[in-house]
Image (cartoon, each protein chain N blue to C red):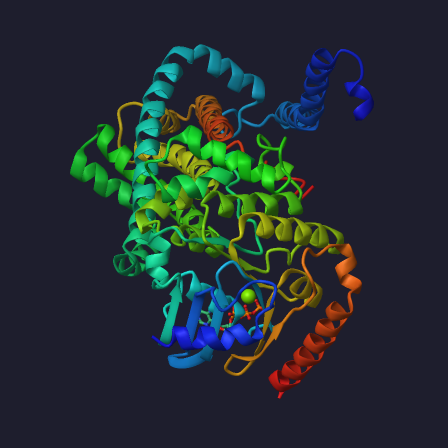
Length: 275
Length: 284
Ligand SMILES: Nc1ncnc2c1ncn2[C@@H]1O[C@H](COP(=O)(O)OP(=O)(O)OP(=O)(O)O)[C@@H](O)[C@H]1O
Ligand SMILES: [Mg+2]
């Protein structure tokens, strides 16, 4: 690897990174192409009816034909995800801070939160629709209920992860609890918080879609539900693709924010663990 | 107070090259005991500790694992409240000494903030302790301390770019930047390799000679204790007390040659046999 960095350092570094990036996505790309080709072949060979499972080409056709309405629906869903996610993050962080700062209250609150986590949130969707109608509010509420938990738990773990000797050090110069919280605990918890936010953002997309299933007049979940009543399976799949792209985009925004906010955090590589 | 009485007692045992009788006890414990809760009951961790550290002295605490060395250090730092007896630092209670910023702490782990570079870390506690200090002033002091511990040139490096020994130097610089009267160190070189340890010992000795701080060092290394200290307190278990206070008569200034000084070897042997004894007792 070192031999590649010879020569003009800036240029070779860029090309080095480019080729390595390509090399990294190549296997995934090849695998996807393979799957799509086999899928298309199976549909054509066995003449599978479109309403059961559409061929990739049919899905792409539907995607192009319905682009306008899909884009509009994606916009509505994205708005729900955005509001829901931000509120989840705020609620999750506040819950963690309250539990750590007010220990006694935290001991009372924590089991309740864990208990609540075991309520199937999806089942709450109809209730929220009943209470708040078909608008934005019930979706945001559902997202918060689903997505604040990973934020709270990871933030909590982060706040507690500070080495005791560091707390001793702060106390040895007379720092108050709040000062220790602000200067040491909260910054220490940021890498954990970012991990929680990455889970929360994917939960937020799920929450939005489920909320739209339960009752909506716009959004990608609504499109999927509507298409299924029409047996328009290609449109369902087209909408699914848009949902996935949306989810992926949101995920990478959070990951980008992580690199910018906590550059000291250890890089996370899901395949190779410790290098 | 009976501190004065104890000073007289200390005067007999302390190394003679400083007028010890004139030096007041900077850190003094009388009849100190500490209980920790254990499974709902109280467990006595320290019992009847009497210790007097003269101002500007360097003393070590040595003893078997779990005997309560760290706990004693924490009482000095105001982090643990004694159940019985008193502890004074510069004539104040440890909590008052903390508020007067008399105490600097160094632990086995450097515990640097990973998002700050070396100089920011070295200035961090000072800026926490003193909200009114100008940033430039704090950084000047931090830079001077980094230089003192031999880290000039590494100010901008992040902790992940520093070796274990260098991180520990930053931790020492961070404590020194507070300009404390008392430096309390809990196995500060415990995680370092043998050669780095010796280097750090020499560095610490140099700092002590230059700054004339009162230093209390907890260590597991007999060599380190003898090389650095004027006095070594040997602690025993169950519950911990000080079983012997050994003055170290190896002449100052101490250098690499000191290791082969007859006084050094004698002290080493004495400490070894004391430790072996208290280890055996601990096992029973
Ligand atoms: N916060 C605490 N609560 C309860 N027990 C404690 C606490 N801190 C220490 N102890 C107990 O007090 C005893 C002395 O601990 P301490 O850490 O002071 O020992 P030590 O001499 O520093 O040991 P080592 O050489 O391993 O560092 C041990 O038995 C330990 O289990
Ligand atoms: Mg200890």
